[in-house]
Image (cartoon, rainbow, N blue to C red; front, side, top):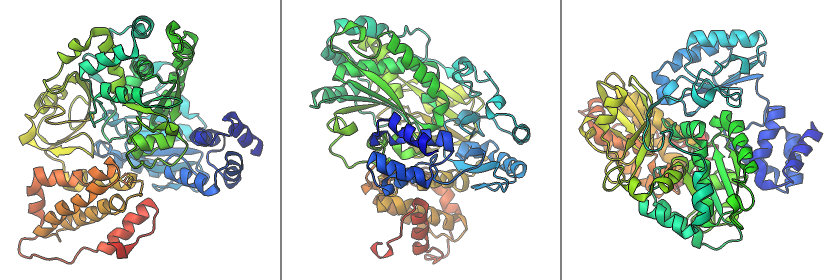
Length: 602
Ligand code: SF4
């Protein structure tokens, strides 16, 4: 084994910034990273054992202890729970003789919980030994486990080709369904791959391209909405030996799965967007950060890049343009929602824990390895070739006055037709509900846990950067759902699990607020507890990154739009109740992120 590990490390030229890849390769041959490997990594990469350990412990899918022969990671998103996760979990427990979070006595099965795996339109879903299993039922679990016990390989158990489209390709071989319900400007099949790279780039200056992107008023589709052309302008102007383009394909917001579709059916559009961005800002390094949960697409995407290299679409003097040298490497993540934040993603790309950086400096000035770096979302980059092909006016004519273009929505929950809907900005929530067949709707989580929980009075609002902005996730909750007990609690648990733990606010406050909510749900709350929740949420605003800054949103937006649900639960005849233990709450929150509580600071 020692020789194998040394070979892996040398395959990456003993480069510590490639630690993520090295750890993935070690897992692929050993299943975990043992102490001897950690020592070798320390010696060869010239980083301390503590640094190696802290990276391993940060990501959900790295381990420093052996796991089972078959490891099941069952998604625990709210949508999974709404569609029968409990029954599926019980079936796995019974069939595998294992408790959640543990390994069976015979070492055959491990059963773990994981945050949203991007399959909200086909839940319950699980990752089993790296393969995705969707639409699980107790019956399917029994069959699966029986076949595994009979020695079948996990790959044989995937419903081959069942997902449709490119999911059926041997390089993907996935039972994941595309569920494209509505196609707009991006998802139509009128795209001629790399036409812009071959024809327009050779006759345009980078400034020409940036001007068209600026004129289109394209804004980042990840949620923040920064003008793309302006970001490219900053990136081009910043000085550095190298310039970098990063495609952020780490969509981890529960309820979103649009990047999965773009990367399965339209990866050429995304890669061409990266090439164009590279040309515009003068980049030579391109990186696509692929979330671990989409590992099943990795070989397919790498194959496309190889093909592009063979056609001079990547490499030196692309399309015959002198000195336009640009290549793309795919970095596989290892499971950490916070890596969707651009500076955390850059840390991860450099082989470190994905902890967000302080800003400024912003990545356009000092990003990956301190080079000027433009980070764009998958959907943003996929929009670029279409804008250049059809012109900025074409794009401006789509959408609303303040928000140009279309938005791809990932719709799931209580609706008849969950899936992908590409709509123009300006479309109302009511229209989306009518499209997806959602009736008797009580609430919708728009934009994932960091977005807003809205009720009927907001259904006539329009999706746009100025009215109801969204990164694209929409989870529908019908009238029978218990919004506070099931929805809000699940979303708060998500933030507690995914905090990187750096800021005391983000480390502690979501857990403290969750405990307060538990007190209210337990019938021990009083009116002032509701106001406490609102005022405590203010503390989170000083957190370093968006995760912490928005971690109270499930509670604050539910109080704003569903205050009656809270008021129905609190005691009316008393003004003070001692049934809340702040110290205990802080201890629990520190345990969740593996840190020591410092109680006297509170
Ligand atoms: Fe980490 Fe939360 Fe602070 Fe962001 S806000 S840096 S996730 S602790």
